[in-house]
Image (cartoon, rainbow, N blue to C red; front, top):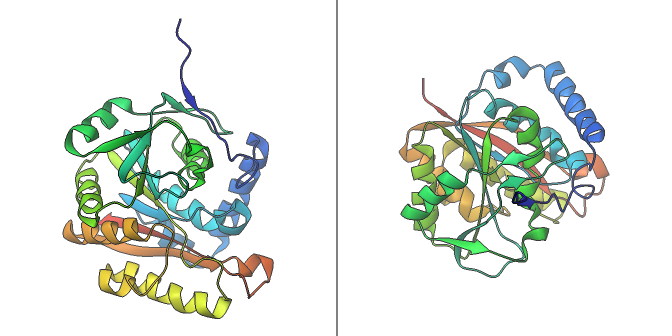
Length: 271
């Protein structure tokens, strides 16, 4: 019998806990804090088709990402597509890695290879064969999916030097599918002073809240082109935008000279 091919969790124990017990402690803490918040009822009523979630270490940005994933799980879908800008692989366009399963500390997630084939008939998809081990931006979202949606299948997409039109058309096409949810993995401003970071992040948050791409040009984000394409796609599909949370690494580290911003946002059908 052929052994199944597995995309290993290469960054477990680095950006997020490597054991099931440790990672579930984080989720319990995140949800306890969320449920104690004054606006928890309002935030938990949101039912998104797509979310933006940060990819910092869990102790820095996990609470913010957790809200997005908890809400996304309310929607019953067949698959979740996780998208981020590549950081370590030289290619142009949109790419994926060819595996049957995705490893997480909470168990394996099945890769929807059939639907990936359908995507590839509509859009040019490059197959990455090496260098993906350090691409943590997509990987860091998978334990959340394994926790909240263990039965769904996943697809990992990375982009690099891609045309805005390709990203916009791809995201629009995915959003039209009622069996697909999207996670766009991105931090905001990175490794700047807290003062500058707050200024840049204010542009980003206002732009996301109002789906204003020109305003987002003044912001910073690790998956900036992906967010701009998502804003345009969700606007064209008449999806409403909701900011779920915002915080910075300085809130935890106390270091105002080296600050990274984290936000999560949800995009929903207008009722």
